[in-house]
Length: 266
Image 1 (cartoon, helix red, strand yellow):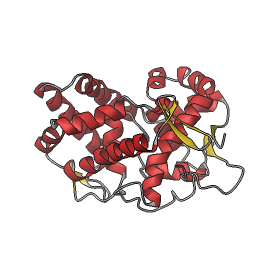
Image 2 (cartoon, rainbow, N blue to C red):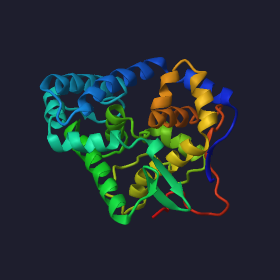
Image 3 (tube, rainbow, N blue to C red):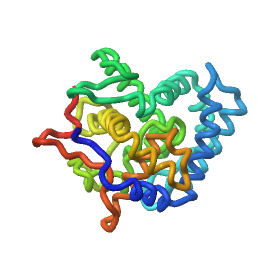
Image 4 (cartoon, helix red, strand yellow):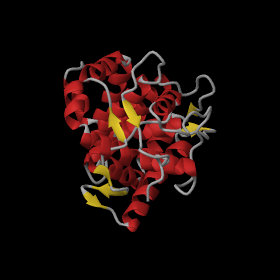
């Protein structure tokens, strides 16, 4: 298939082990609280408060407010957003649809092992972009880029990599053309090219996760963070981040037999 993991399992292990350990700890701590938040029909106020404080703290540790990145709102704004039933429901849908539930078969997007209808895909994409826009507008001050809303959604749901500068560079090095931008603005929907890139990449990575499962499993299980096998979105976030370095091997690649743009899927 056009998207695959190349290289040896040893290189996967080295990439995961080389990722900053404090970032791994941050992710694990927020996800542990997020699982409680997403577990039921509606979370308790205490769980909402715990998640709001942990999420805000980690986003700041991950650079929000530094070097031109948008600053975070106060913790009450985080609580207010995460406490809204419609936001909880939106994030729960993403958490219940990890990359392992997505696939691409003969240029058609699949959900939970079945070819998705147009209506199902539209609904799924609308929900995803609703979560991203809500995070961008309510959790940050003056945000216009995709990176930090995607980081927030990744931390809560584990859904897919966030398009920060390192991940975009890693994608570009892997043959995903059109990612070498100084800024990647948050698209309003999937009608534009950048919107397609955000919406289609999870399905392509799901295809890669399925086709390269033995290789990925061994590389992850041999690492210091073996529990990441339960977090495919985070695994690709780490691998793409690490392959941004010019001295690092390219592990996740897009190599089609023709000039097809990687994001051109129905």
